[in-house]
Every structure is written in structure tokens, then in C-alpha cells.
Image (cartoon, rainbow, N blue to C red; front, side, top):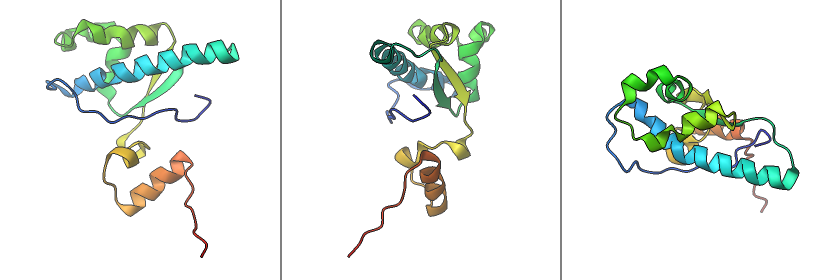
Length: 133
């Protein structure tokens, strides 16, 4: 919110993924959290007219949320996960594709090489601390 990350989480799926499109299931928790924070922000600041932007590195998940015609390919996904599609439709959230090489959160969830870690840190606005002796 306000062009900043407001949360991150790494969690194991509780179900077996049958396709790459099931990253959509992982978005459900993020969407719920984003909508609840948006409502809280509206109460406090009395304004937030733009959707909350959620970066996702899975194009299939983004397509499912935007296109009801995609339903044929994901009939095996439980109906409760269509909350995401509803929130996108109601303009409460917006999903944006972020290629894996630019996924800032990877520094928190994966073992990265030094160069990639520094790049992610810079993109996140995290500064290196210098220690004075």
C-alpha cells in the first residue's frame, strides 16, 4: 500500500498441486489479507480508491482471476478460491505479473546468490548497514 510492501508470507500448500495454475490457491490468503487491510485503511484514512496491487509470478494464476472463460481448465479448484476473481472484478485488488527474476520476496523465501540477493534488497529499498567499531 502506498507503493510499499505491507506483508509477506511463505507457506506450504495444504493440498497437492495438480497443475501450475494452482498457484491461484496461494493467492487466496493474500487476497483476503489485502482486502481486510484495504477496509482498515479506508476506516482510518477515509480513502483508498485504487485496488491493492498484488505481484504474482505465475501467469496462469493471473489469467484465472481475470477470465471466467478459463473455468474449463480449473474445474478441480474448490469454489472458495473464486474469492480472488470476485475481488479483482470488484476492483478491490489488482494482480500484476512479476517475472521470477524480479520477484523481490524471493530473498525472504529462497536461497539466493550474492548478486541476486543484493539486487532484490535494492529493489525492496533495504539499505546495507555499516558497523562502526
